[in-house]
Amino acid sequence: MTEPASFLFENVHAFTADPRRPSAEAVAVRADRIVFAGSRAQARAFAGARTRVVDGGGGTLLPGFIDCHFHLLYGALNLDGMQLEPAASYEQLAVIVRAYAAGHPEDAWLAGTGARYQLGPGGTPLDRHALDALVADRPIYINAYDGHTSWGNSVALQRAGLFHGGNTGPNSEIVVDAAGEATGELREPGAYQALSDLVPKPDAARRRALVQQALHLTAGFGVTSVHNMDNSGDQAGLYAALEAAGELTCRIYLAYSVSPQTRPAAFLEEVLPLQRSLTGGRLRAGAVKFFIDGVIESYTGMLVDPYADAPSTRGAGNYDPETYRRLVTEADRLGLQIFTHSVGDRGVRTVLDAYEHAARVNAPHERRHRVEHIELIHPDDVARFRSLGVVASMQPLHAPARVDETDIWPLRVGRGRWPLSFAWRTLRAAGATLVFGSDWPVVTQNPLKALGHAVGRQPWEPGMPDQRQTLTEALLSYTRDAARSEFQEHQKGSIKEGYLADLVLLPADLFTLEPAAIAGLQPVLTMLDGQVVFEGA
Image 1 (cartoon, rainbow, N blue to C red):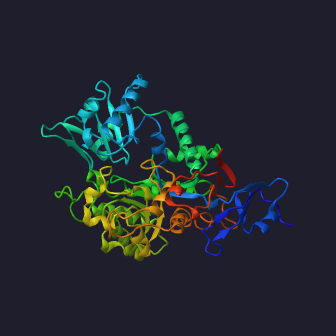
Image 2: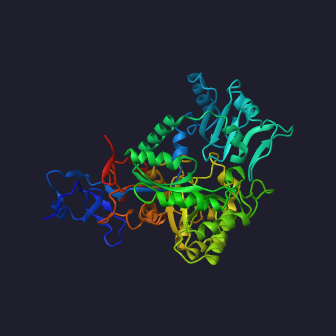
Image 3: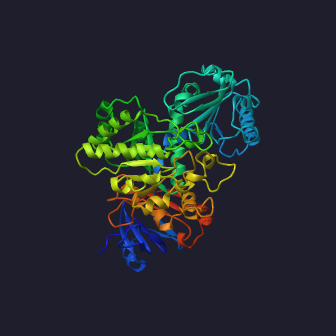
């Protein structure tokens, strides 16, 4: 006699991500595992008196989405303060800032996140004068949506000691005017950290509450696993405490943050002990994260050829190549998985060169190192992803939908490089393993919006390569292949007997919908470890 299941999903179109059984009408769950995927008639054998039967109404059942590029604490902290993402003009920015200032007279600093570039009057670059015109008697600190540029008003710059410029870290700049005074634009953390450090931070209780709020959002989007890109400080301890309390409603794969100042010994002293202590449950470690460059928007992404709208620069690196290669080689020798942020084509090449060197000098092992973002790639480097076994980790919603004044990215690289910008199809066709994520809070963590964009993207100009993905490809990049990119394909990312019961139920059959309709869907139910962590009204 078949032991009853705890949950039985029936009347569903299950996308299993299992090539041996690509679809199923019903799925049974017992405890934290999937115990059946197949026909509705056979599934009835798993129904018992205590089985919760969920009628999917003909909707789609998927493996839980795996977001391969995420910033949980950073995103959670951004839920406080001024929310600037809706502002598309200086006038709209003014409304948000002034309303927040009036509603929070007790705040010593006015801090906000999510700002677009070119938010000054008339679509010009934002500067301290434009911010002074909004609020002059309290310091304003604004962070760009991508976290790579910040702006401050005059009083903020003065308090941070940046009004007349100053020393910065590598690939960073305090932009100054002809008089040697800071314009208010601060490129990369090496320039803005001194100002950011002055902004009051939430206490431990508030931090925990904000992370819980972020996790609630994550579950509501059907995301059951994230690859956390910036593990530093006490983040691991915070997440471990949530797991111990039964409040961690998402699996987290931690990547230890590496900087140019990181000693190779830190891998032995900090990363490997963390990896050994976090091997199971919902919290795991085992990766390290580098930044080789910055972003195209602030000219800090590393390009092979000069920027189209600033021919005097090709961008600079955060590391000298030898330091980066040495750290990569040591991390690889110790068996750590390596993620490296790189948006520019010269940055991508530098990363691939270092990975290739490590593979040549170290003992053979299963690597699966990754390049994160790859917003631009040189044609000479496309095939190297497959030959080196390097994973291409990309974010669909980073690619501008069109070329217009709302996004300066295409202008920076120039028309000649558009064909290999956000080159999803080009990389996949060359045999690369392609996985998807959000980079939250840079863009929404909603994977359904990303899916809609991935399958509906149009070339920026006639005759350009079509980089669209099929729906099956995009789903695999968020499920089975995403699990493989963290060495977990043996237990999640697919709907298979014996796999973890991480599932998301959608209210419609995805394969019958247009891209815009996919982007507008809201999950009905999200399950983690066989437990419902979100259920819509």
